[in-house]
Image 1 (spheres, rainbow, N blue to C red):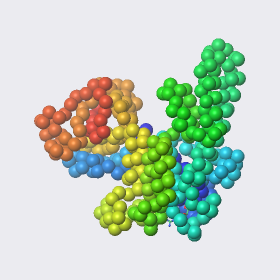
Image 2: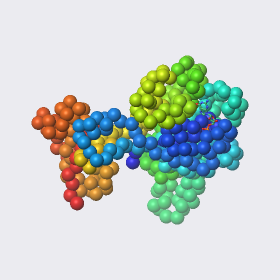
Image 3: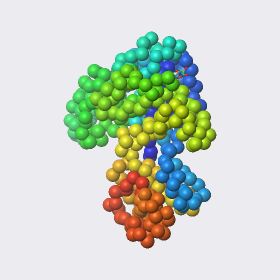
Image 4: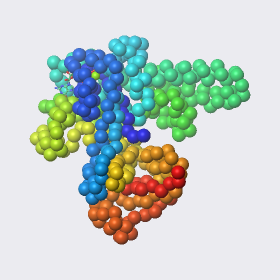
Length: 368
Ligand SMILES: Nc1nc2c(ncn2[C@@H]2O[C@H](COP(=O)(O)OP(=O)(O)OP(=O)(O)O)[C@@H](O)[C@H]2O)c(=O)[nH]1
Ligand SMILES: [Mg+2]
């Protein structure tokens, strides 16, 4: 569990540059389309000052931040679903991610090739939308044919087909017009029925505008266009300069990074913004465990209850869950020690129905 992001976009828009900077995992980035062939996978630690503050108050042997996974794949072009460019076969690598990061080129630079020779974010986004929709259409058609065929086998299959065929027909219609499955606003039950297909257009998207170093702080009409499209879809936009991110990533200390950000007129790195946007988009929450062995941040979904949170650590913890000792990290920051938190009556014993809150510090009691 945690945040997994699949990076999509046209070729040569800066996907790998951003990927390398974010994940500090080297990926080949070069000024020619289709530089990336095989997918790159990178893990990033989630920056969280609360974990550092907890560690100042509760000394420990190991500090383990939450992690985010990024998958960088080959760029898509118009016709990718029919094998144009490198085709769309690499989409399989992002079928399991939670969120799509759609990188859109938002800077002019005649030296860096744009596959359509023109910077046009609206058109660029449409091309990717259509190719993702066509990839899903293939999966939906396959499933449709299977459902129809098996409906004649027995009563049970006929019953399934009765529910599935109209749903799949509705999806086929939207996808063949280049519209994603998300645009259909399917019900929870419908989404559950198609979950195992891992359709790409069911995933929420964050739009990343790749701007160049000269325009990061100026009004940028391309960014405005992307923002407008994103907002109309209820999606967030993050503005990143691949090159600046790369420089930030190469700095050793937090002080150096803060100094550098200030020098270029930014308050937060693109990576940080993107991760926060991902957490918001997916409704993720963080809880902590703390003790002399390790202090660690864990990722859960909003609304998860104590046993589910325990299950993120270990499935046995969920099965044998008895109680959780809980307090908010904010109380620790006020009272400076667990002992004092207890004395102030802020230390609680919670049961199976407790909805874990962002920033909770938890100890679990469980049966083996
Ligand atoms: N100046 C400048 N150049 C950038 C920036 N971001 C990317 N580039 C350049 O754009 C070119 C393409 O970048 P890549 O990261 O390889 O692009 P990609 O989207 O991964 O491309 P494919 O793998 O071919 O799909 C490289 O020459 C980068 O150096 C940026 O923020 N500023
Ligand atoms: Mg690349």
